[in-house]
Length: 113
Length: 120
Image (cartoon, rainbow over all chains, first blue to last red; front, side, top):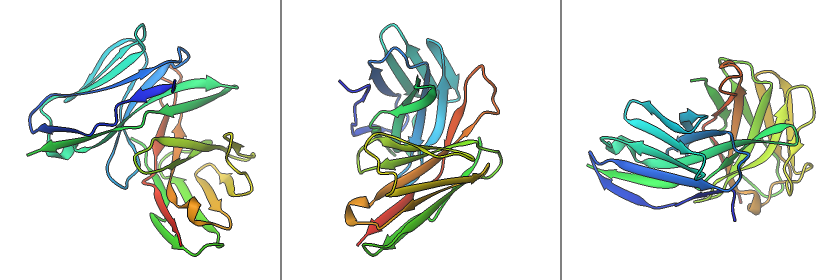
């Protein structure tokens, strides 16, 4: 079982739709949870950064963490064509005294005008 | 957010040549930088952790002599792919760790735009 599982999609929605992106994980050692957005042929851009279980909202984006279920989500409200990108979940754990980010495979999202 | 600059964005080289990729933190000092590799439709895979003034820590399966990392200053880390071969063709991405947010939230990694390496 992989440490982090993410459905690669692709996911296609109409403009204005609510998008739900999800990741599951198996390692309880993960303490910090992040969502990155990656446009084609570009580096990942940090969108959300959370620590505890619960919701964190930033504009049209809401990150949700459920540590008991080992499940995290990213919701995008009023989706726009400019939101079309690959969304990567990432989780941080400590290994051998150093911290390590583990990424999901990414979900490719297309928002159609 | 913090800015990380990666150069070049695209490299095409002949098999057997060496290629150097630079990663710079532009508005903060980064004692730790990371190098990742990403294959099409795959996740980012950590290759090595680069610490300023010391040797890099490589992940299992990554050849140290193949991928040379130098982190000589607080704002610059370089990755050199030595004697590149077609199987080294990939998207290489660096990130820099920003501690400025304090310990409550832990540190954040900011990523460069990536370098697409094609070895002919």
